[in-house]
Amino acid sequence: MSVDEARRARLMSGEAWDDFCDQLKAAGRIVARETAGGDPQDAVEGYRYLTRMLMMGNFRVIERRTPGTKPRFIGLIPPPLKGGIGVQSPNQDHIVQPVDARYRYRITGTAGDVYTHLSAWSPPIPDDVGAVPVGLDAEDHLETFNPNMALTPHTLVLGDIANADGTVDFILSVDPPDDGSAWMSMAPTTRELMGRVVWDDRNEQTPPRLLIECLDEHEQPETPSPEDMAERLAVAGQLILGQKADYEGWTNDLLTRENDTHFTSEWYERIGGSPDDRHFEFGYWRVPEGMALVVEFEEMPTQHWNFQLCNHWMENLANYSTGEGYIDKENAVRDGSHLRIVVAHEDPGVPNWIQPDTHDHGVMGIRFVRPSREPQVSCRLIPVSDLTS
Image (cartoon, rainbow, N blue to C red; front, side, top):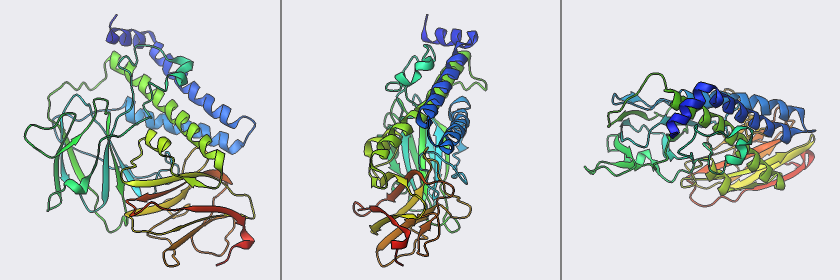
């Protein structure tokens, strides 16, 4: 039986759906083992996060549709008012554009004046996905089948290839174009063109406005075939599980050194980070009542920086509509080049205070986009009474 025949048979028999449900059960087990006998709030937010990831898996995999030969706009996805995935920046929109690495794409439009970093999202997915079961042991398959683990060996800064008038016109493909056109390369495993659009001022700046078209004619059925649907279910389930498992491993690593930040490049690159243009430190904060976490660094020239708090599952505590839960380059109060950020439950009467809402622990992140040198960040937990203005 061929791979496609096996996929079709598993979809028609219901095995593909059963496998998808088992992948979700495996993801739920991660929440259970992480919170067994622990914080009820972590458990509630863990299962809520799992349902949010289910919606994301539906959007990125089940409803996935790659471009045809007719140009269409590439949309920007703003950050949610609260939540987000993996310490998602409040100052950053995302591009999540599905592509098929078998084909060539042309991208045209205008770059705008917002810093935009593009990458080719290329996760490890086996050729026979959907044809063989993974079931409740799906976590054991993550080493070779993890749609969340997205190394991005091919990247591009949009402004670097823009013409003098701000327009862009380039080819996205595995092989270089024959006519010498501007080119962004992708891998044979690339599934999405990812973009990070970093705002300084949303009221004043202009975002990129891009169109994408496929240069190769190919069939695009409105409804997936049974074999395609079996593959989509398998990838969606493993994507959700991979997010839970990867962030669990990363968080547990951060827990070994609480109230400190480090550039954990292995974990950051594993989930599609872009170390070529940013220095991103992560840590695990734990601040009891009456205490304050003081985060300090000497500011250097950067494209952008921000510091933010998250819960145990790396969901932002920031309320973007009111500007709470994070401090950034544009809104920080400075003492010369020295920056001090204070996390405390009650207002300590000092600048750059972040109130952690109903939480007293979670993940924190501080990102520097295009820093002129490697930042030196220090963290210390002290009594609030020891703070000086």
